[in-house]
Image (cartoon, rainbow, N blue to C red; front, side):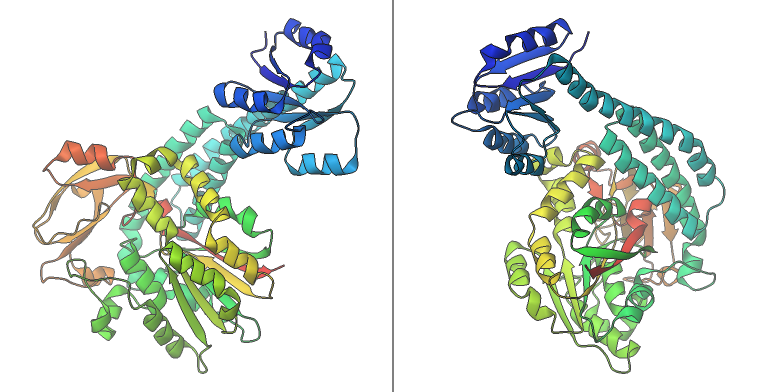
Length: 518
């Protein structure tokens, strides 16, 4: 017996009684209404409706108008349009509004059954195929995670895991999603060990290293800057690889992806350190040494990213004999977003335009502060969905649409990612100890060494030294640091929130994308 619930809207529903009885005899539950308004009310009131059959030529609210309103509120609800004719303009409009299928009156019972099988068996087959494919690759990923990976193969594994997350999201294969989450946790445990064993040697050039924040532009952007074609460098802070993949189809409507690569964020994976390093082309220790008036330590008052334009111009001056002309724009609020849109084409008079867009950072921090956002971004899938929804309606997308009218090359990257924290780790420190949940800087810190990468000599991590006895610690995997005071309260408050500053695949392996206008 089927459990599928059908809503059928037709102003001549009485004449469809034989079809309705046939469906009922086959085990389907059918709700009937005679107009679009009632159809919308039913969709609002009954969240168990699986599919809508919608007459195209109803009086009042037409079928197409009803379809549009249903799709606005319930974009994933399948709708089958039923029409008396196949007039081209009607069908184009219906298909453009994402109908699942259409039937021509008079509708025969067997046609209805075939449509239902196509819709629901198709979804089931996709789910089963996706589940089978992941089961087959599960063991392969497991073996690779435990086989002594390099920085390149770790990036490959991370991309593979994210691609499976997106596939399982799309097919709604929830059981496999739980297994994949556990596999990602295992991957992060091994990746943390890998970073602990290699990071200080990498950052001090004692062994071959990945591209890091401080040489990202020199390696991945500057070689391709061409004075004949305007270049735009878009730094979307906190943009994880999975968030890039969720907005990629939108951007690809107007831009061709030429190259998708990665770099490793330096530690701490936080804006103050990683983004300053990107724009300066220097490690934090070097920034403090060469530009002491432009660096503030964590325990000093004042904005920590106020000199990005200056640092960028200095890096261009050091890199190019004839530096490209540059403009810089940072967007941290709606007002800045409007300025960005209004001036989007003027920016292209420069050789290089740098845009720093802070929304994703605000979203991830706001998620900690606001209960509404905690509900909206309750898990990884919801966080991705929220990112996509924001991007579609953002000044940033409007800006890129305008810029795409010209021939430009576009570089999209980030400063670091975020991880959803789950496991508290106790830390004791003095009043000077920093407040970040994923890294700490302080004197006489007490902590569980199993949970952290510790750098007792900041110089070994190419980091500034706020005090003579300063130690940096970085949380591994999904840990987050809590003080003993009010431990349970803050555990409940911060658990399941997105944070950054520590060691994880999500925070450290960051996308760098090269695109061109189509």
